[in-house]
Image (cartoon, rainbow, N blue to C red):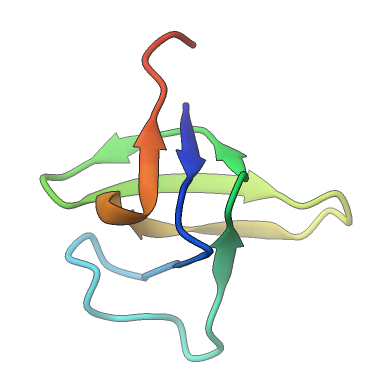
Length: 70
């Protein structure tokens, strides 16, 4: 599990965090997400909003806190 620590954490298409989506997507501080894959600088996650929208992509580790207890 991971928790977003930044006010807004941009979601990227690539594992290097260089290519954001054409329409910017963000997670906000306090969002709790599942860590599916990880690189040295980013984490891949998939998320369904309460409205049923599917959001996926890479988030920079600088914007998150990893929770190893879950």
